[in-house]
Length: 115
Length: 117
Image 1 (tube, each protein chain N blue to C red):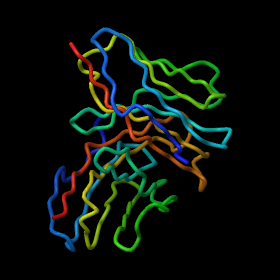
Image 2 (cartoon, each protein chain N blue to C red; image 1 turned 30 degrees about the vertical axis):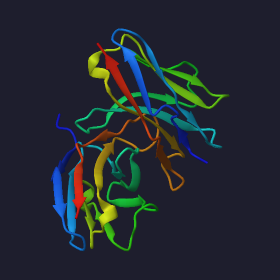
Image 3 (cartoon, rainbow over the protein chains, first blue to last red; image 1 turned 45 degrees about the vertical axis):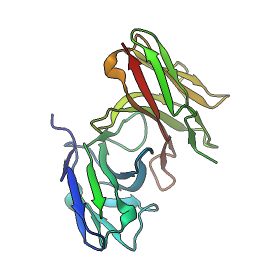
Image 4 (cartoon, chains in turn yellow, blue; image 1 turned 60 degrees about the vertical axis):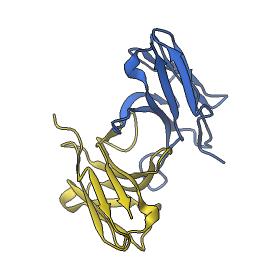
């Protein structure tokens, strides 16, 4: 069974440029998460989807970040315009459900460098 | 207050010995879940073990066990018979809520484990 797929793996952009990350979760997983992981820190949740609905986007900086999960499968996270402080690893994860003993499966992440 | 506290930024252990990684948590919920993940230098987060707040027995998964002390709000990870491949960053995480609007998921800052040959 394929794991969580993310692309690109690495991205280097100049500040003020837009960038987008793509995630394809494990088949059948209804819940999809986007995290940001700064160097030396644990992941911080940005947004959580239940199917195609964003049920928790309280940590998403909405002035520059947007996300979508069309048809409740794959998802895109966008930053426009990027700032130097956005340099981080962006992780996508999925789980069968968001409660109970259902662990999250993580993708390899996208390492973003903003110069 | 920190939701998840991992007080050991780094730990060293000799190969084949056991090691305990500490995790304390803060919640007022009665129902919550605790997770441990491993993140090797390759970057991918790997699920290790889960403990539900109502589980009466400590969780075990192979060489991993969770020392759950509810009254102390601690959920320490014990790795037995350490292997060189165990060298990685380890994160403790807590899920509060039932998956609805009050759902929260918080990770600690991690502990870097180094296994020496």
